[in-house]
Image (cartoon, rainbow, N blue to C red; front, side, top):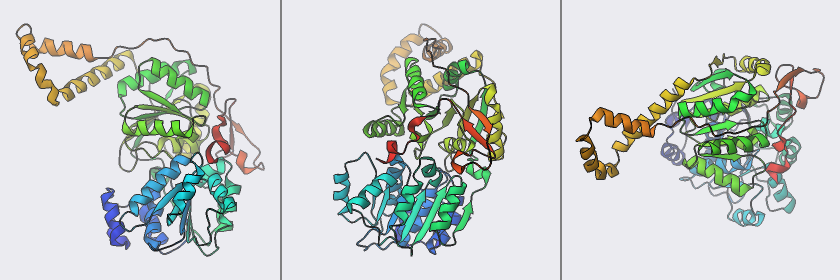
Length: 476
């Protein structure tokens, strides 16, 4: 295994990598960094969670001169959240070399960004709409750019940003290094690369690596009306540290988050209708563990770089196989284990097969958990809580009471009673969710426009498509 030291990096960048806890390069980093350091154009097929930000961030920081007076590097991302997270990681990589990165995105006061730009950051990370706004105002100039990165290009395509990206690239000198990263490489992305890149080298992570080998993937076939109770039972049995539950629509997200809250779960919702301040607050609470469950739409959760997500639940099966890859990438990140479970109605089994064909992997069938399994799961959680309590200093003040109780009854009976009190009983608080129309896979005409094409000859349709895939929701 090649180490970061063998990649020819300078001491300041190596020191930053060590401080960040990186021990050895991930596959995408090992294959990307040498070519990127040599200045070659690259296309990397990799999803969030494989370490792709460092794959382009490390060589970008290494190659840019610390005394640069103008912006030398630019990263274009589809969402505000991803822009902020990428900027944070680049700032960590550049901390000892002195390379500064500034995030530029909609929803933040533009005058505040203009003021920050006057401090002359060497790298900017931005969403397409806000970057174009700065270009129109002439508060950002791209004529000195040496390195361009298009991050999550397929998602920018899905959100309608391709024309914006082309407008940005036309403002940058032709003599530049361009790197493009995307979980999938559809035809429009290939065309973009052909027009704006110079003989790019393509780096593909194998399907097994793309679908996160550390994530245990399974599905449950069930009726729509069973989903909520089964989800509650799974949450009680598995007791995830941090979990993301994906739904197809914003309405569904709000309904499910409200229903889970009624049942006593620590939960928040995130989707495109929330204000930027509210989204940031929810993400911060989730990242810090103040809330344990995040209910989200696909677009709202794109770019979330949160370590420690142990479980992903697809309450609604994603509308396309690529969406499945993006969703399960929230867990099992860079060496950590995770679980991804998908609810599939009988009419959606064909789509599950399409997903299996794409990832070249069989998703394990799981049965609906029983009441006995629920009880055992809650007993296990109660036992873990009791053992954790024995390790705290506060337990000492109860020692006298414990001795008094032991004088009246035996220790086994006493512990059994404590476990019973700690064991959560099944909550039967009534809730009602509006049924969601199943996703259907329909054949399409292969001569149709690329943006209407699904995976391998299928066009995915649903009567309840999430409208938050509008560009205005994210870039302005």
